[in-house]
Length: 94
Image (cartoon, rainbow, N blue to C red):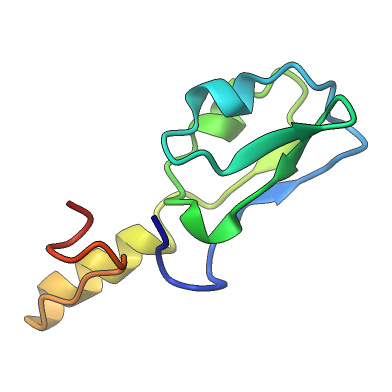
């Protein structure tokens, strides 16, 4: 699933990452993968900016401004009456 291209605010500080995998476990869209015992952002455009990864990271290696990407696109579409969806799945992320 892809949302708005190149807008996700998700950041990963690889130096802080301890490779615990918490981000992989809580991410609903498989944004992360493990490589060389560290998390990597495998698909930034799949991030819906829910913030679960940052809230569950025990070493604060992740940061994200929740609701600024996809959520913003959905809300703007609703408020502007355009009904635009931010993802490529049609029917707004369904």
